[in-house]
Amino acid sequence: MTDLSALETKTRNWLKPYTNAPLGHFINGQRVDGDQNRIVDVTTPVDNSALGQMQAGTEADIDKAANAAWDAFQNWRAMPGSQRRAILHAVADGIEARADEIAHVESFDTGQPIRFMKKAAIRGAANFRFFADKAPSAMDGQALPTDTHLNVTTRMPLGPIGVITPWNTPFMLSTWKIAPALAAGCTVVQKPAEFSPFSAMILAEIAHEAGLPAGVLNVVNGLGEGAGKALTEHRHIKAVAFVGESHTGTLIQRQTAATLKRIHLELGGKNPCIVFDDADMDRALDAAVFMQFSLNGERCTSSTRLLVQDTIYDDFTARVKDRIANLTVGHPLDPETEIGPLIHPTHHEKVLSYFDIAKEDGAKTVIGGKRHGDTGCYVEPTLFTGASNDMRIAQEEIFGPVLTAIPFKDEADALRIGNDVDYGLTAYVWTHSMERGLRMSKGLEAGMVWVNSENNRHLPAPFGGMKASGIGRDGGDYSFDFYMETKNMCYAYGTHTVPQLGKG
Ligand code: NAD
Image: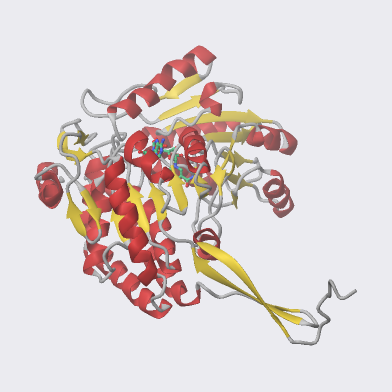
């Protein structure tokens, strides 16, 4: 039996350097305090007890951080890519050395089960290694000759980048942004989510111990409407890489307009998992359950709408129900736990509210549909059947361990229902027919489609959504397209006729 109180004590000890006083900011290579009068409590969703406190950064804190990032940019951009590569590999080494600590801190802070957070911390290191190796070639371009001229393209780093991140897998998600930005030669000011601020400070410390020059990576803690907004409006910040809700994405778009910033928005999803009756049922079942119930369902790529062909609907949803009944709900630090508590009481209330909404809309709750236990932010993993796609449980992002199953007749019906939402992040298709898989992936309005697979990430491949799920792509060279400016340089061979004016 796992000794949970020993695990909690170990985690609180790891947290001590960040909780013995209200957590401040990391600016120009060191931890600094901001306005001590603006303090926000940070809790653990295990029992909503205090973990620590955080200083809510102000416009003045953002100004300091953005100025530091601007000053540091001049040297960082000029550093040879091979040197940047070495430093970023050292950051990855540092993450690996502290991966257990990062995983525990993040699990206790967010409620995400430790089994997933351990992998997420290691993936953070992998992201740094991947982009470290790309740093020496980040400026590469093309030679585009004509008969008379040689066009040569290159890419230049944009400048200081504002990185704004959410709470669902904060550490790993932030490395998707920070690693390519640094590899490209940009500097960064990060504003982490207010519900989960600690792991960003750990990353800043690791990076500087690994040799990252002061000012290259800065962190300002705070609230979205305070520090977040100020970051999006600062004149030294040249682009904003944002991960969060679609509504917040619209605010970012508005806030960045006055300073004409480039924006990358990774937003919400309401992704379909479409199971045809010719699919490999066992694999489809594994994937459907994994994609909705891993990471507490607080996952932008979760397969939250289960579209099942009517010929197998009853049988398949009965098997999903059996698997849900077997899920282990519990303390996030327990290695056995499959579903932990949701991030925060506000989000907990939001997810619980959908249990009534489902009833009002006429869906059937076949399992779950209530809170789990009396303390903390736990919910029972839930399956709604008999749902139609116009219900709110099929249209709105619930962001919890809640699955809505909808029957469909045929391929055309599946495609229509699959696309009939505002979002367009991912889609999953299960079929034995290659032609149908091809037709479906062509027709589905999603930035990423997996056929006969759960979300399987390949770092060079583009990651991102269409419609209300976002603007822009992460991954491989796509990341550099965002963090860098493409420049064309044109050289004449001296053989062409230069047009003449004013010669009479
Ligand atoms: P959120 O939009 O509430 O907050 C995200 C971040 O934005 C936080 O740091 C917050 O402080 C900041 N923020 C809020 N208002 C702001 C403003 N006006 N200006 C600047 N910053 C502001 O999102 P959340 O609840 O933290 O995260 C959950 C959401 O993130 C879900 O919708 C989920 O789908 C989405 N998400 C998307 C992806 C993806 O890759 N598409 C990945 C993970 C999470």
